[in-house]
Amino acid sequence: MIPQECKNTPQSKVFCPTRILTAGNAIELRDWAKAAINQGTTVLLIDFSQVSFMDSSGLGALISINQMVKLSGGQIRICSLHGQARMLFEMTNLHNCFHIYPDRQAADVALFQKAI
Image (tube, rainbow, N blue to C red; front, top):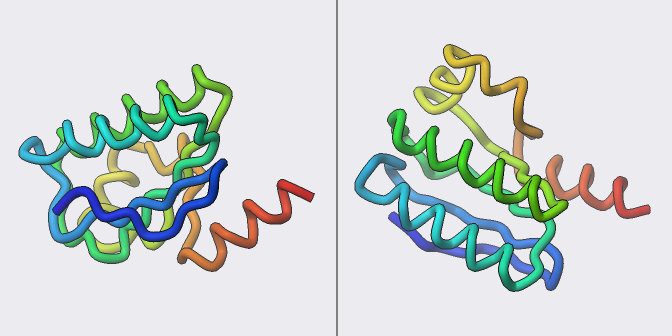
């Protein structure tokens, strides 16, 4: 599943996990985010378009990443959240804690507008 980086700039990295985000690979996602932050990345975008299932460990990894990013002065954005993963965000009310965009294009537009 991890890692599959999709599109990067010096200040932002896009990560595209595939299939599932569970205890088996949540640590990998956290390690990817930590390395990106240590390299000076200020915006992490996680594209959920290919994720079909996420458990509480995957959600915990995202919460941990959110804390790391905020401490470094950056931000995490999520796009293309759908199905079971979206339901998990809504059930835990975490959809109110993250910048969530319907698709990658909307996330890119929002990021560009903020940069202006």
